[in-house]
Each structure stands twice: as structure tokens, then as C-alpha cells.
Length: 502
Image (cartoon, rainbow, N blue to C red; front, side):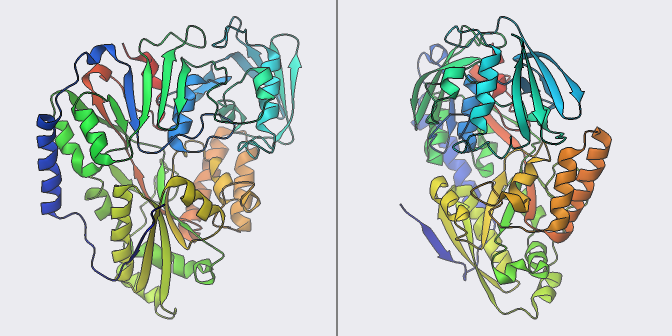
């Protein structure tokens, strides 16, 4: 496995006009090299992604493309609205709180899995039992569930250990058939689903979906293929030749103007709920000091990166929550040098994915930090190795993205002191009693306005103490073929609108 290591002692700059012009010129020539496919209207819609999909089992999938592909085949009791992300009834007909610790959910009648089996209360009970098992990566999410009980033939009562405000959002978790939910986790292609598509073929590089005859919602009109293409030039060729239809967040921003000029392609973007940030290893003595973390934050020119590398398709971040109005973290190299004046010279590793765009940004971050006296060693890794290094604490800094912060409670999984690996994803080993308290209070507060006020304070606390270093919120940007015209990614990046295309 190839690992790129670069000592950032030389000067690295934002893309030069020459480099950018060369990319765009090459893009303009590609259609002549790759004639459009014949009979394209008869083939499945093709979504191209950059990473291999090892599993679509909802109980264990964590990789973003795998999660989004999984939701084509599966649905939950509630579904998130693709525009507002509010939880609405899906496999459920209705729900109501019996008290602050008990939620009663009424199932819709006549809902069938892809196999034809009717959805019943036993499927729901066994599904949530499987989510709470140790082999599920959702076990910490459903830790507040004390019991899930059938009430008659068509209702389920969820009983909580304590008040838990985000239960409704969490009931977006896919429902599995009872007998399959009792089986061990795996790649997931064999799991019966309630989504608009059924899995026709599964391989890490290619997942094929066919419109399901049963399930929830109207029947999709097109089959869908999710194809892994690791090389960005190859992804561009597939789009330009008419062999692929949708690419979401898989094209370098510098190439987007070239795609916008193509007759049969369009570029659509939507403000997202993600946040790109620097993960900080708090087990490192220097990085445990708030002044050092602030110095690193001050050294980063977020506005320049957003305007150049990301082609104005990103917003500099204040905290981690995407829609909390606060002034963005400021760029102040002088303040950074002042904070580091009494520190010994720092040499830090920076882990990133091996995506070309991410590596380029990591190089620029290294230059910015070199300007204030911090030496950065970049380590670019494929996803599995990157995750292993993070879980093992073998890093100083890491350039990462939280794909969906539409529900602020998700921050607890990444920042609460109880959720260090393997229980959760607090890979920086953050231990902040005040932060823990606010996360716990937000999790238990049922009043929506009080929760908003609490999370605003929590985000301000993160902004001030920097347990991680927020960078920017990137738009979800899709390159879309004429065949898939009308497709827009959801704010959380999901592909739910695929099933509605005419």
C-alpha cells in the first residue's frame, strides 16, 4: 500500500494560473477523446464514487459512499426530509410521546419488504436489538434505549433509560427483516429492504440496484449502478463520454468550470451540513495545550482556501455546526507566532485521505503552518488505513470531514469523553467536563427552543476551546448528465432524489 510522506520544508502554493489553465484545457479536449456512449438512455443511471464500498449493511457501514448506497435499499420508521432534514413518518404511520421516556410508533399497514414479506412489529423489535449488539457500529447511538416492545400487532413502544431528544432522528435507521436482523453483520447485499431499490449485484467496485416492486414510496423508474472509480481523470472521462450520470463531491473544484461549459452536463450545488476540520490528538502534550491549538487555528487562511482551492463553494467555519451564525475563525499569523513564541519547535504529522484535492489542500495547510514555525509531515492514506491509524492514535493532526451535522447530538459521538474508540469516534481523546455536560444536556432536552440555545452555547465553547479545529463547510456539488437532470443532492449528501427522477 503506497503511503505518501512529504516533509513540507519547501514552498507550496495555491493552484497557479498555469496549473489551473492546463487542467481546464485538458478537460476541454476530453470529449474529442471519448465519444458519447450509444444507447445511453437504455442503461442504468450511473453514480460514480471514489472509494470502494466494503459493506452496505446498515449496522456497520461507516464509509460515506457505502452509507448513501445503503439508503437506496433501506428505509426506517421515520425518514429525513431531503430538504429540511426533519424526521417524517416513513414505515411508520404516526408516532406520539406517551411521556418523556416513552414513544409509541404506529406502523403503516401493507408495507412489504422487497421479498414480499409484510413488515410487522417483530421486524422492528429485532432490528433495534441488532443495533444494540456489540458487533454493530450503532450500539452507542442506541445506548439510551432501555426496551423496544411490541404493543399488539401494529405498534411499538420505545422506552428510554433517560430523556433523549434525538430519538426521532435516530429512528431514520433502516428496518431489517426479523430473521436477518438476528444474523451476524456482513457485506449486507443479502439483506431485505424497504427502500426504493433492491440490490441486484454487490462488489466493492460496483453495486447494482433495481427498482423494487415493493417497499416505501413510489416505484423508481431507473435502475442505478454505483461504480467506484478511484482516479479523478477516469471519473471525468466517464462523465464526459456519457457513461456516467452523477458525481457528487468527486470532482476537483478547479475542473468544475469546464464541466459547466459542457452541453450535456450541468453542475448543481447545495449548502451542506458537513464540516471539514482538523482532528487533534490530545494525547500529545503540546496539542493538549489550548494555546497551541489556537495558534494552529490562527495560522490557517480559511477564506483563501474557500475562494481558491474550493472555487467559492465553501464557507469558512466558526464552529462545527453549519447554520449557527457566528463570525468565522480568523486568520492571524502574527497572533499565531505570538502564541508559539515560548513553545519548542513543533514537528507534527498530518494525516489525510489520498484524494488529490485533499492532498493539495493539506500541502497548503503545511505551508501556512511552516510560515508560523510549525513543520508538518503529510501522510496520505486510503480510507481503511487512515481509519486504523486514527483509532490507534498514530497521528498528531488529521484533515477530516464530518459528513452530516444536521443533528447536533452527533457531536457527542466524536467529542464526548465516554466515546473514545472502540466505543465511539472520539479519536482525539478529548476530555472536557464542560463539553461533556453540554452534550449530555442537549441530548436530554426535549424543548426545541431550549435545545437550540444550548447548542449555540456548545458551539461557542468549541469555538473558544478548540477540541478540534473547524475549517470550512463545503457545498455538496454534483456533476449531472442530461438524463439525470433534476437531481440535486440533499443537504446531508444523500441520494434520496434518485428514486424520483422521471
